Image (cartoon, rainbow, N blue to C red; front, side):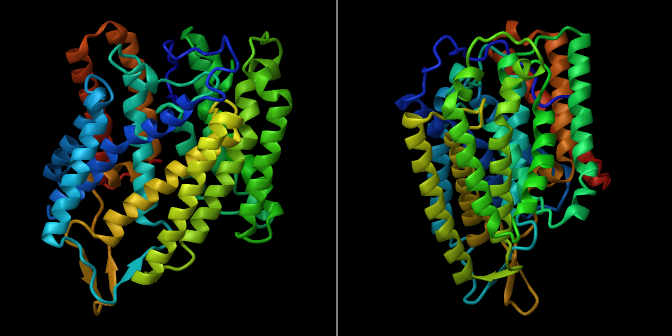
Length: 460
């Protein structure tokens, strides 16, 4: 019932607070970590391309999609991690060549693309976060999981460092700016469940004496608490913005102030070996990251409102918008690379470099998904009305399942992760056993929410 089962094998670079601060390794890590999620991304694209003609929500379609999404994800983050980049490169080239040769998805002369209030690209990014996290939180407990993918304790940009950042972004993409104090009265419905889950997780972990790495969020806090506090604080801060456009200035100002405080000594204190006496010292990692989380959250709300300003876009409008996103993505990558040498990329404190990196990753995902699912319309798009508009055909069933019951999938994956750790001792498993256990685990998690989708059951 938690966001992530603590990992005793997390890379420990806390002996020297300067490790990875001004280093080329953080640059290469940030790129390599982004490439680590490509197999999942390609699985979504191939599922839409190859099985889009099958009946929606059919069991056959789900099983075939799992073969393209679940199995590659399991293999390429464990025993086949050395071949992950090669797999992604080959599959991407073959897919592009197929689309070019078959003229797949060529738009009609005057199409209009349905963006709506929850664009297809946001749904895909949310599914990417859920699927990737589901795989990683159990895979990390197996010896076959690459060391470089494990969370950093001070500075770094590993694959698992992306988890909490992606969830903050996806939370922001479906949130609204609080316009007055009346909007704040609605917060308990979304904040209280997260805080309750966080408290329940802390109580259970304490009761069973399960090891928790305090360098993640602190002694008592966990990711549920961080997401809940981010939602609460972000909504309060958003009252300062008189319009959605002002969220950008507000978020950047908050981020710069946050980084200034970190550079004045907070970052060094958080990453030191100082005693954990008292609540503030005991939870310094989680508490110090909150304003960085809020800045990323506000940036995500701004992005959502800017992207969905119009329900329908012409081909020219969409391409113009995506060109602006490309420029923003390049700028964010450059800021992240620069930060690796100047202030450092740190998930622990949600530093300026980390926020820049996460926004670069998310903008890049939006661009890739927009190309394949909007511009190319892979999977035989169906025109509606008089042909003036083009709507995206159904998303992969795997994606729709995660979108309908994402939090349920999230909690189930964490529950099963704990169960596997207690019953099967993953640290003692060989490569073949790890692949089998992970595949069954991924299938059960995805299968449960798929059945819920077919029965139209929505919990959370």
